[in-house]
Length: 154
Figure 1 (cartoon, rainbow, N blue to C red):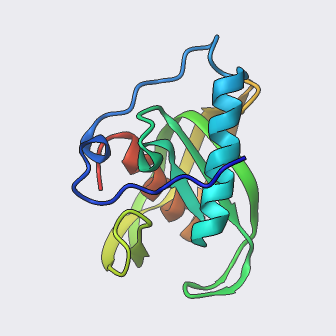
Figure 2 (cartoon, rainbow, N blue to C red):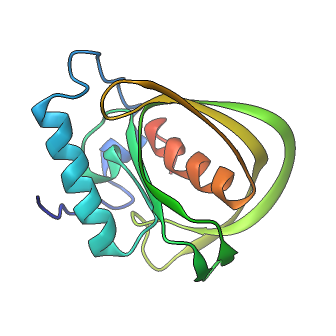
Figure 3 (cartoon, helix red, strand yellow):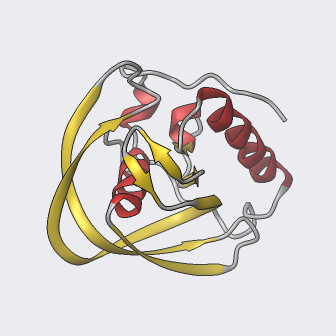
């Protein structure tokens, strides 16, 4: 569809708590267009995750796409393009591990962040269906990073 500009640190939308998408919005044309634009943007910027607030849309939507194989984070598991609407994280084991995280909204800078490494994510798909994933390690970290954006955490 279209590559959008990723807003950067300092933009007020990045500090807002994003609003949940209503059931009648999910599956609608505007949300489908946003998902398509975010997918194009993620791929154009070379990222592995993108939250709607990063393209100045303060709604609880994020996408993840991890090609797997060798990356700057080492060898990681593949995750096909997955859309998370109104996600909720449940920590299953609070034992943390740390990674040097990067962010498309703060280009050229990485920060060492420790996060729980075993989580369950409950969310809705782009069709509005309920879904759930249990993740460990790096994938748990990636999702927590993207979902931080939904809570105004940069």
